[in-house]
Length: 84
Image (cartoon, rainbow, N blue to C red):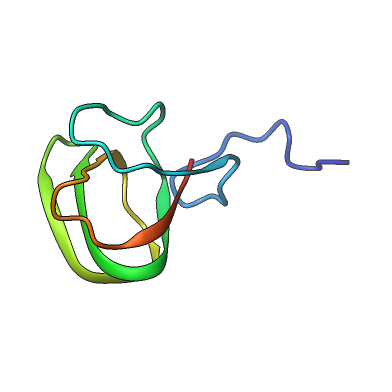
């Protein structure tokens, strides 16, 4: 039984969905993330929900980022999972 099913979730709430992210320079993700998990450390080139493009150098572990695109160019990190 999910006791929290009828409660509204906020940006700091636990993730409800997750999916592996495939880097792609031309297409946005189906959903804007609440956070991303970087399984294998490396550079993470993203476009944030605001539209700002940034590369996080040597990213690893949990990153509380609202990402709308994971770029293939300049991304060397792998096993990236988006949570929303």
